[in-house]
Length: 147
Image (cartoon, rainbow, N blue to C red; front, side):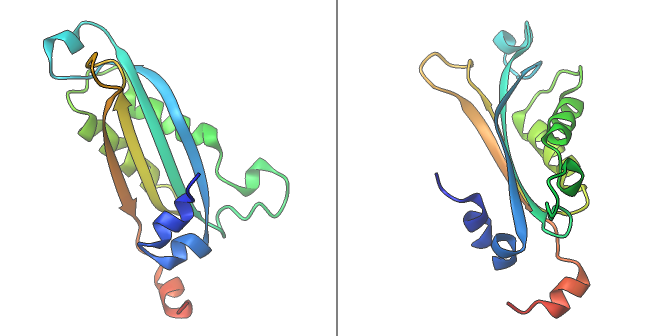
């Protein structure tokens, strides 16, 4: 498996060396989503993949205690809140809503959110979108870390 930290590190080396990666893969929820008539009748499966780069000072894991890192339940709760009960027209806007809510979390330096609908076309495994976002480094970290 490829390292998500190394991939983020290509954007900013500090993401690879000063962060911990947390990942949630193929989290599945029934979502009312789509613009086509055949998508409006009932909820359809939507898969969420999330990668978070969390600054080590916010997730040091110095103790074997969940309080020392970011909980995966939080990621799932953010997704569930963004999905809600409303009908979503586009994966793009739902993906952006999840990304923006996660990016607002203290300590999240960067993220990748992808959504995929596996049941849209019989001749395709899935259709999806992806978003990558980076938070600016705090001024103190920019001034003291020249690596």
